[in-house]
Amino acid sequence: MKKIFLILFFASTLNSQFKIGKYSGEFLATGFGSRALGLGGASVALVSDVTSAYWNPAALAKLNYPEISFMHDERFGSLVNYDYGGAAIPFGNNFDTENVLLDENGNATLQKQFDVSTFAISLTRLGVDGISDTRNSWADSNSNGIFDEFSRPEINKITYFNAADWVLYLSYAKQHSEKLFWGANVKLIRRSFKEIGASGIGIDFGALYDFNDNLTFGLSAQDISTTLLFWSTGKNEIITPTIKLGSAFQLNIWKGKIALATDFDFRFEGRQTASFSDLGAMSIDPRIGIEYDYDGIVAVRAGVNDIGNLTLGAGIHLRKIDVDYSFAKFDAADELGNSHRISLRIKIEEEQFKR
Image (cartoon, rainbow, N blue to C red; front, side, top):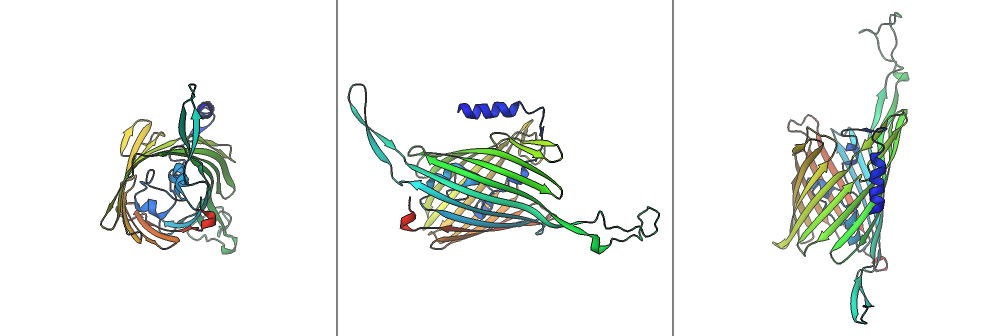
């Protein structure tokens, strides 16, 4: 806990040297996995697979077998592509052990200890590819230094480049007690746009609490260290923390399971627009999602995301493979196109790999 306070104190002393950019961390807000997008992103307390590294790293401690996942996301009419790959490996025993402790009076008590932890690695790329650079291709047809309607670009002088944001997540999670789990990420960031770029590092923290067999509460503090971005231009940015609080209620019904999840995103960058509740420097955005999973075979999902748009999704469960698809609208007029996301999750359910 002291280390966290030292990190936050150090970050606060840099405010005069770094600019807090509104929406500067938006490239980190996409998330992993089609299931979560179909639920409107309401996944802090519901997620329990390899994609937990983004939504709530604490939930990684619930894995019993190694998992691998891949995802492809297209948005704005396929102009922007978002790709993800991740792997998680659990360690320890999937049962608790008991140690005999003696108090000062010599009385014996049993204390449960949990030897359960998970390591994960995730890599994402958000990019626009094949951008035309025509700055050096225009010919002055009149040789008068004026570009008019007769001026044309020289095709052979047009060059192309990519704009991309890469993020590498290194995650660790542990079961603290029978009901409580915690986890953390260290993420390494690289942004590039032709000849300029930026590098940064950030820290996330998550906690999960199983209140009972049906109700779970979750906390995810993203960029809790106040993520710093150092640009090659000399400009420096601060990505402020995002606190996600969520709950999930699950109930067995109709030969399957129904789940209702709600999340609230607390941001601290002074968003006056695109937020449900504006409290000055802080804004609050709710998310809600519902899922019906029939007999572990097929699932259907719907939700409302943080900008108030409808999301839909579906999934098929095979023996060791889950295939999920989700759809999200960006605006009511469809001027920005829609988001289509497909993901694959492979569970390595072999006895020699069981935790």
